[in-house]
Length: 87
Image 1 (cartoon, rainbow, N blue to C red):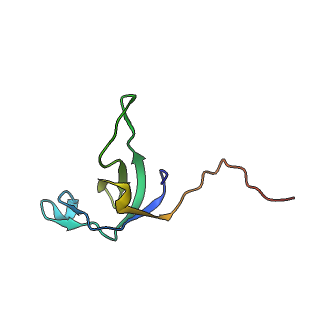
Image 2: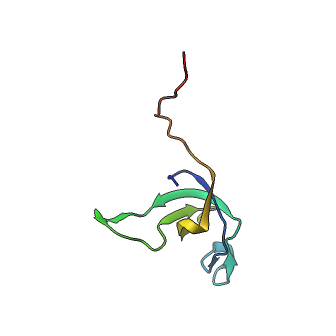
Image 3: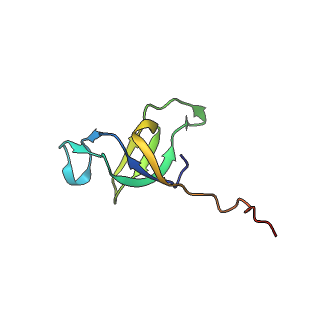
């Protein structure tokens, strides 16, 4: 998974910080969002985050998830890679 990929939550994940359902259980299963960050270091020092994938859903709502909770829907390909077309 790369930053910018469209992802979907494939397992049941209950959160309590959804802005529209504050302090109530909300299941993220099936929700789609954009991968905004992969947390690998803190202040230049490597870390092993429990929930390293930060996903932006709608508006201000973001959640940190694990790799096994997500599936890639649409992968973003870097535009600076040369295409391999035969001339």
